[in-house]
Length: 322
Image (cartoon, rainbow, N blue to C red; front, top):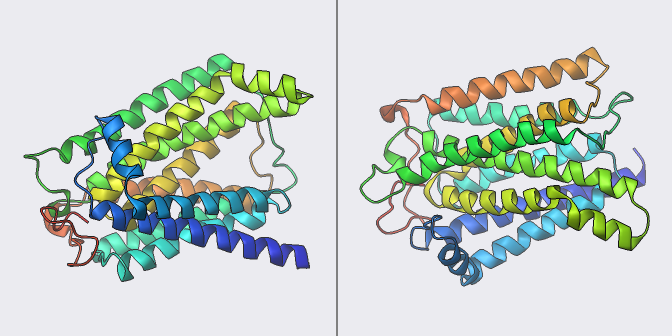
């Protein structure tokens, strides 16, 4: 392995560490806030921006994203993605040590399987046949993205309703709320990733700063990206506040990764891995991820033993929701 590869892996590790540490910091800050009402967007944004601890976590996440963009400029995805996927393991460790979350036996095995799915998905990327596509038919893009956004919002909205006053506490039932938030936000982030992919066609086809800027501003993908990212971010914060990060984070990451791989490959006419081994890894990851999400969402209330232990992330009046 060359020296640049070692530097790239180090930067990818820094990216994963900063991003996921920031996520845990946000979770701690959210634990001290009143319950977020994402139906009141201005108030929710004002609440988040007024909290220095949350802003510190958000800044760490931005640092992680900046490092990720930097490392992807000189290292292949097949090298970087497995390292970034390992950041989910850091979330699991920190959620136990810092947030004092605990999981039941079934939940532990399911979360471990989700982490393995991320690694399998990362390992299935790259290769000689993995050429990048940049253009897709607008009609097909709309036909895929619009239903995905609607489904993502509906799934996440179900979890939001469960947080309403008078509803039963999510911590006292199955981790279906975390799965709903995870699947809903994962779909929204996946659509945002498709929008980024759509914008890449403009970046490739335009020459000159003026024409590039005009192409980006006039593209509907820019506004799809902004809207989906904003909605997913707000719903993700609500999910972090009321659900266990150790379930929500892997569920969201796996949903977004699987969705983007399937939809992106079909819409942009990219080839599946030519290697039977890589293709097998990808199909296995998708199958296992679906099975795990179904298993977690169907756990009975008496099986959900993952209430948070008393600690700094517990909010008065929300004990057991972590």
